[in-house]
Length: 340
Ligand SMILES: [Zn+2]
Image 1 (spheres, rainbow, N blue to C red):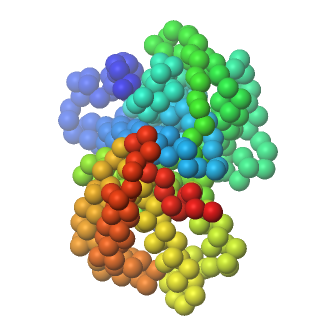
Image 2 (image 1 turned 120 degrees about the horizontal axis):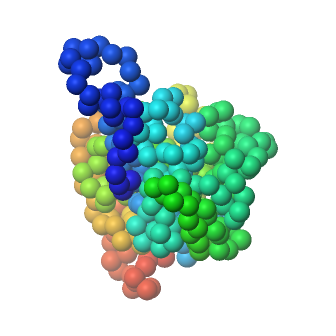
C-alpha cells in the first residue's frame, strides 16, 4: 500500500478548524468524497492487476501471443482532472507513479511498491520518452504520455533485465525487473456506474460498478477470465473479418449467431483459465447464477446473450472434462488453445 499520508495544504484545509457549514459549502479541491473515490478505484485496480497477472502467467504455456508481464500498473498525473486531489489521494510526487503491483510478480520481487514515482527506464527519463507515433496519437491527449511510457517499458522488459529509477519518500533508488513472457493482455478498471466488462483484443476492461459487485476474487476472476478468453481467441478480429455488427443491430440474424458462438467459446475457455491460475472454477457458476437471477431482464435476455442456465451447463461440461483429465504440473491444457 502507499503507506503514510503526506501532510499537504489539502489535508490542512480538511482538518483545520473551520465552521462545518463553511467546509460543506467550500468549493475546494480537497473534496474528501473525491479522495475516497480515487482510493477506492486504486483498490479495484490493484485487485484486477493481481487477478490479471495470475491469469496471464498461470496460462502462459498455452498462449501463442506473449509479452513480458511484470505485474505493474502505472498511471500518469495527467489522467486526473483534479491533479491536486490525485496527488494527495494516490501519493504522486512526480508525473508517472506506480498504481498497483501484483503479489508474487516480477515487479514485487524487484521491490516495487504502489506510490513509487517512476523517473527512468534503463536510464531514459520518463519525460524524454517521445509521446508520438501512430498508436499513441489515437489515445486521448491525457493518456498519450502513459501509453508511451507503457510501450517503452514493455519494449525494455521484452529485451530482458530492466532497470527502473524510482523515487520513494524523497529517496532515489534503482530496482531491476526481470519479467518472463506470459499471455499478452492488459487489464484496467474504467470508472462507471454501469456494470460491464469488455475485451478489445489487447485490453480487458471491467467497470468499477462491476468490480464492486463481486463477492470474492474467484468471482472477479471468472469475469476477467471470460474477457481474457475473448482476447486469447482473437474474437474481435474474427467478428470484424466476418463483418459482424457488434452494435444494436448485432442482436439480430447472422450477427447474433456469430456473436453467440464467441460467447460460448469464451465461457468454455474461462473455467480452464481460472483453474490454471489457481482460482476456483465453481465461482463462475456461483457468479453467473447470481448475476443472471438479478439481471435476467437486461442484456442477458438479448438473443446474443443466451440465458445463464445455459452458461452454467457449459461451465459444468468443461469442469467435467477437467475432472476426467490428468493434470500436467497442476495445469489443464485448454482444448480451445491447444487444438490445432
Ligand atoms: Zn463475452
